[in-house]
Length: 466
Image (spheres, one colour):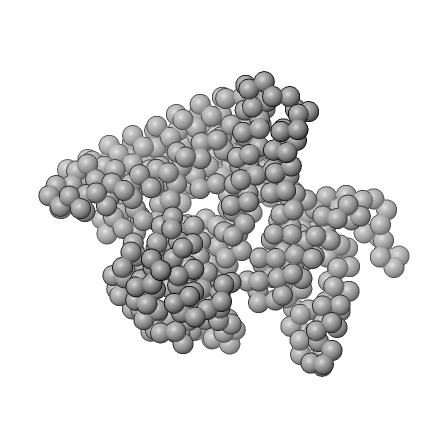
């Protein structure tokens, strides 16, 4: 196992196998939940073989691995003796104690923000590959139809369109499964609720009722909020039934009663409320982009690295998917700008470094990785220990964000790791290239301005190049 030595070191740094309650991962980090954060040795985790850095956030030890995080995750599970899917059972009692301690210390707001970010990562990151594939397949299909002479009625076009549809239309099923798993319920129950919502007998059907109570007609395909509300409600129903149903009948009676209780509430109350919340979100996005995009985009682009630190960037996916389903585009382009600015800043550092070729090579590698969309290795491995360089990143983000906001840059694919390799996300569904050209201009500004600003800062603080 390639990451066995790293896994052994990280297990020890996390306070030992007994201190670990669950293990997940996002695009670049191992996320290790622990019972006692005071037992974590962050320095030892950072020093582990093949680890690019480590932080403690929201009750987790997060070890930065990079693009090979899935392989590291599997090796870690095998080394620790966990099963795939997280292994240990979450310690709800300790979680409650942690929140209570946070209230006493006045840190409850930050603690809840970090916990929200961690949950968002666990729910959305396993779904992201399907969203990326679906969106990029649609872009390829549109390019072939518009510029390759492919007929929209051809079998190839229909298959490509079916891949896109499978990625997004069944989103409530994927979300239901993953959220139920994160909330320590049977994942299949969450998937079943999602499948029910997008069923042709339910989704968009007029005139339905449940024992005389009318069911509002809503199209739940590609939605996020309705299934989230439904699974959260299912969690509380599940906990009550777990306590009152005898063990001898629990296997069949608990799921039966769960669905009998949850389904009508979801279809009559929670689903319609979730749809209304989704429309309100798309309306807010539209207003933001029509009125203050030139202010919001540069500010959010400059703040994005710190959203990533808290894990809040994973929550963008809900906004992206909702916007794409209801508007046909999404405004979450500040991650693209921020990633390129981190890459430009790291590239400036790499070109300014003297002496140690191995260290310069490492910084060059993480800079290129950041330009491709994965920033944690660069951010934690080279920039965070040189905090003034982050001013250069912010300057580039503000300049590029202003241009993107004034001309309203849009993306058409949800969940893609935003960088130079994911440029297809900016090609409009009709195949027009104006938005793509704007994205190229914004990318050039992001990299060039952050690079120049970082070199100026390094000239003033030459010790950064050591």
